Length: 236
Image (cartoon, rainbow, N blue to C red; front, top):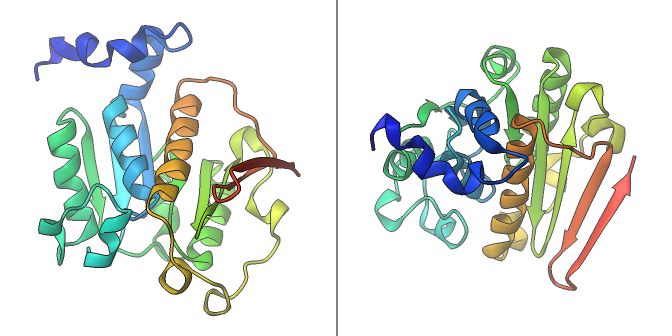
């Protein structure tokens, strides 16, 4: 696709009064880091790439396994055995070659977190363990980066925007991380495949709103229970 096709490609976003050409230019100039290319990361990566985010960083150190495919929709049977980052890169290239993809095939840790996160405007946290979530949260506070947060299990999910223009953060809701080994996870209790699609899409939408300077509700945690179909918000 040629550069002059930008308007045609993104016209349905540009037609939205609150986005317009100005907002689309912001999207195309933005740099977003998605941590995790799994259940949550898949829809996040998909919709950010489709929207024309300029630079999309994806950090993951895992490989695609067959049991991932019920929910990690950017990966296919042919991806099994490949790194999730390489699989995500192939997906983005096919969807929107205008997006600059930066693959980070390593685990976010205390030694590299600040260097990696500092290169991006918005951080989207889709990892599956508490140690990474809290490390990313604390690093975003230090770097004054906005963090889009989400988590899933079974039929339930959570979404919040932390540290946005100095707003509250993960530790204001849950001061200390629980031990990963003591907490249930998708490997032990499972997750219905469409749930991360819902939560990940909500996270992607919040990210796009942040980039285009649309109103964001902060200091609020959204709880989604898809079994009883209840959506609740908790202010903190």
